[in-house]
Length: 132
Image (tube, rainbow, N blue to C red; front, side, top):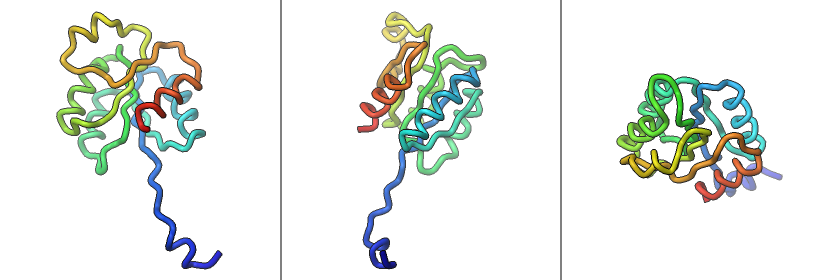
């Protein structure tokens, strides 16, 4: 292969996913699963730190994967703040406590929901569906 071959190829940007969960084990599991599938991942144990990083990020991440129950701020509040900055950001709630009733009463809704515990194949299927 010569230099002109690589110059003709389009640069493919791997999707960036922000993972926000106060459980380090879940963060590591999700990040590893996504990395093996070719995604870039940034992990955050604090929704406040994630919100600040999101505000500063350019370009914005392609997907937010958020836990619902976290200290400082719940996942729907985090999603609301991020969507105020980037209305079209995709989101996946990964939670064992988020109910249909909570979603019905919320002004903001994630694009997808995955119940904990989950298997990696279900996570990847949900991510692929959201990112196309």
